[in-house]
Length: 309
Ligand SMILES: Cc1ncc(COP(=O)(O)O)c(C=O)c1O
Image (tube, rainbow, N blue to C red; front, side):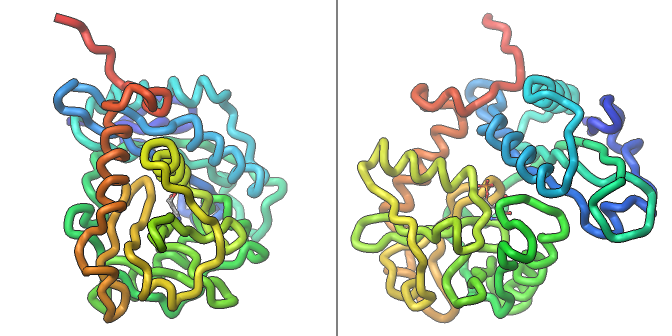
């Protein structure tokens, strides 16, 4: 199966989508991106792209931080994403990566007086963490970048060195994922996921002011918990000690879906098994992202035009 990219305004084979070594974004991290999932529903022979519009809204916000204007309307972005995935023809879970970047081949650290370009590529992408057994996490020795260093609500490429340091440190210590704290020692998030605890049967998650990316999966889970389970979410600062005493813990993200956390450092979370509220939310979430729950079909953009027999 051939892979394609949307590059310099047209669909080209992935192998032809190349940038020069002097590209500003490559040298200084001056790019922003999104991670979007196409979820393959085998029974229906359909792929549903999850909350596409919200991802492009967040990309637009990230672009504003970097002084980049995407030369496409929202409708064009959606259309071109669909065309790209259709052309790739994947019939499995897929990851879609739009990126806006400073494309001038110029040396000099700045944001102004530089040209920008936009691209999208897509690739098959299975589970990121173990969603069935759950993940073992450690508290990272790296602190989360503070919002007054780089605006944290933007998905800026250069920012991800912070995540990469934490993830690799965790992997080298034998853990699956890292949990980063803020400068003042509150729980922030995983290297690429938001974090939730279950305390007294309620969801508790760090507030936006604790340097989290405002996750689309985070919002999805909060919405499903409230609407479908009658469980509210308290957004408040979390002390690291609470990680060890919570009933349940899970991570949310486009890549990680809803991943239970069963161990933090040397301590089991709750019983050390996947918690019951986590499991209920996971089941609801997977029904929704696979286009099986009619109530939330607005969040799912079908990729293929199905011909009825
Ligand atoms: C640092 C970070 N936090 C949280 C998330 C989760 O965000 P979302 O649910 O929108 O994928 C991501 C993934 O994009 C991330 O990179």
